[in-house]
Length: 291
Image 1 (tube, helix red, strand yellow):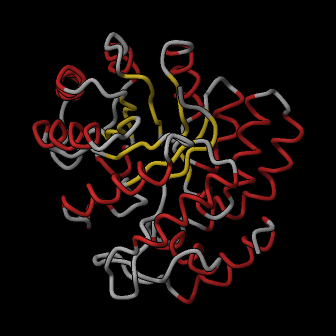
Image 2 (cartoon, one colour):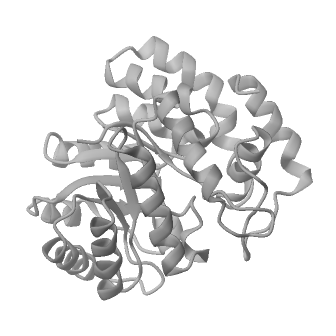
């Protein structure tokens, strides 16, 4: 159901910090035109922790209305509370999202059994397709492959986003999950290698800035065209790296603003991108051919 380059979309905001609904719609159209294979709304890159409940619902609603079935809309619905995650996941389903991306509960550091019971409860409560999301650098806990294997029994758990960047872990997951659930890289820098060893795609930050190239790279990799995928990825590598010079999504929102696709709004505690790093990102954008 899901494969290729799935953009973890930034949330357009006015300079005042308010949601920019007009540019959100136009940004979705830009990705559809560029060939992006799916859109994640209200995820980490979308500044979900800074959005109110009503804003999150509005963004998902706009995404579904704008996409009109032309591209999958995946809503970030994970929190550190199982009951709250069920609530947000059910809301996303009612708003028409095609799937939910649900991060491992953060801050409270559950055990492997706690993670299993969390995702079990959500999967049993809400029938929407679910992509589980492991990102130890942000959650402070790591969902191990054995726990993923236990969760594959639930038919609506259809995918895993792995943001460990550990290719050995990726190979282990492929051995466990291949042809059972889809596997996505959550680290652009190693996404090509992840796909070539059996992954299904990349949930990408870089795709915000280079949507066409990321789609073409993922499709080439999935088709086994290693030479073409490698050539594209080489031009994108400076972007993969420089878009994390400060905490995501600070650099990527600056870069998308430089393309003229969004205004410069960002919400505290995130701050505008430091001038010290701007030339490095701009040079990466030139190398990749987006400017």
